[in-house]
Amino acid sequence: MSEGPRSRGANPGRIDMSVDLVIRDARHVVMADESGAALDGVTIAVDDGRIVSMGSDVPDADTVIDGRDLLVMPGLVNLHTHLAMTLLRGIAEDVDLQGFLQRVWAEEARVMDLRGVYVGTRLGALESLLGGTTTALDMYFHPADAHRAAVDVGLRHVTGPVFFSFPGPDGLSWDERMDLARAWPQTLASLGGPHVPSALMPHAAFTVGVDHLREIADLARAQGSIIHTHASENDQENADTVKATGMRPIPALESSGVLTLAPVLGHGVRLDESERRTVAQTDTSVAHCPGSNLKLASGAADIVGYRADGIRVGLGTDGCSSSNDLDMFSVMRLAANLARLVRDDPAAISARDIVAAATLEGARAVRLGDRIGTVEVGKEADLVAIDLRAPHLVPLHDPYTAIVFSAGRSDVRHVLVAGEPVVIDRQPTRVDTDQILRDAYDVVKAS
Ligand SMILES: [Zn+2]
Image 1 (cartoon, protein in one colour):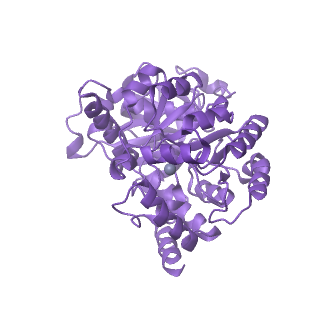
Image 2 (cartoon, helix red, strand yellow):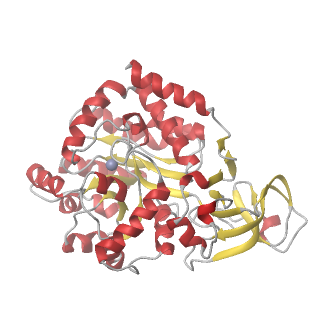
Image 3 (tube, helix red, strand yellow):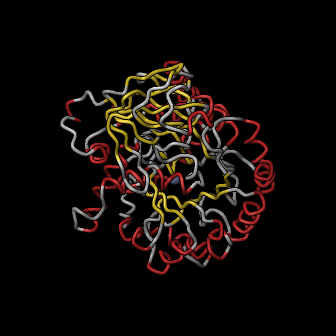
């Protein structure tokens, strides 16, 4: 599926090549591959969007980044979010999921027109990149405007049409949603940006009827799209789904054919044993969102048990109206500590497993695992460089442990997406931060 590196870069021993960019002599490189390896004092060469060599040689390059104070790791994959909802940050506090949805849906009707989605997604994409997230699986209305906004800022943005069986804030009928979805692969191709799969996003089994879910599954199968939905976020959602469909969310998704497409399930907190087996057998992924789950008191997903069952677990922030930010470093630490508390075992999950969940496992869940998610020759260069000149990162015995338990998003200094430097010295290279902040205030106030 992915092209190999260009021939001049395939041999790490050669030094007579010239490349687009090198990170020279990186102090630590967290590969986040299956072996959980970390390398020290490595120069990473990037050309034509890909990592073409990693070693001691330093090829000529148009751009040279001094890596001596840097820890380089794969870009983080936020496997469940609603980027435009940055504009709803802080509007629904101290309520459970159902109270939260009531407040959010009222505010969406006020703020989230086409411009609101565009401005909110730009803000969310900027917050993501500055914090080391290079890929986001983003569910929101007006996906073309959202995608345009995210791509402008430089994010690898996986999105697609959202479905409700009733009119949402975008006011679309079911037939209009299906028309949008049928055209989505072409729309996506016309908007450019780093490679992503087409996606379809039924909101949840309690808001999309089983017959409608079946239509979505059939279309996704025909066009090769992935599916992203919410499932079993809390007990009340399970009860609401039983009321709406006669089934809990996992059986509803199974009976409609959605699970044959190995979807990504946002949350998956309240899965019973047989549902866990079904999720594992269908290669379905869970996007674990501990920040949102803790804040809404939705529950604590047993991700250690899920992984033992064979379920792929990635990490997500959820939207800013529930988690209040898009900070994947805080999500990693919460996920590690919550899993240990749930299991009453400080060795229940390792920092390496948490980093893998936030990178390679998330990439695999959106079928990008052969392109991104690790720092390896041949992969696209979605890279994050952490500034090690900080008291809280000294001394540093194990880079994986430092990432999960000591580092924070404000330590992110440089970010590459598909080889392009989109953040350099903590500043975005493609957009004006002040303008994005002003636009966000304007939309929220003016609406
Ligand atoms: Zn969500």
